[in-house]
Image (cartoon, rainbow, N blue to C red; front, side, top):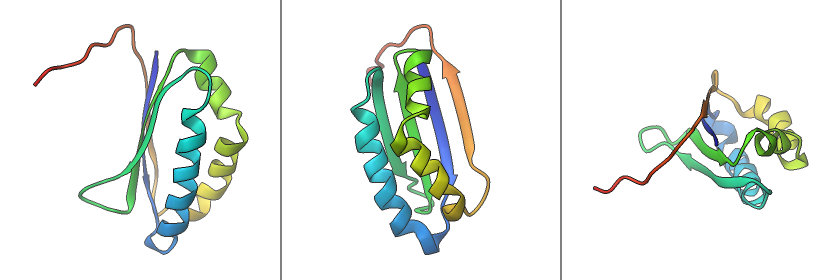
Length: 101
């Protein structure tokens, strides 16, 4: 499994526009083959930071996502919305289990 955690600082001037596009991106991404989970949220401490948590079945699913129209359109628009450097972390996961609290 491939997991991605990405954080994007969004310029407050473009926040509403960015969130509308991100909502559409997340919806379309969740429908992709090989997508296990795709979530976009705003940070509770800074509403102008959007965090993505993504899980893919494998490398092929991850690669296919990066070639979709909705993702490439997001990347094109993202440069106008950013208020700083994004942080993108990728993890290759051999096993996963739920944690009970």
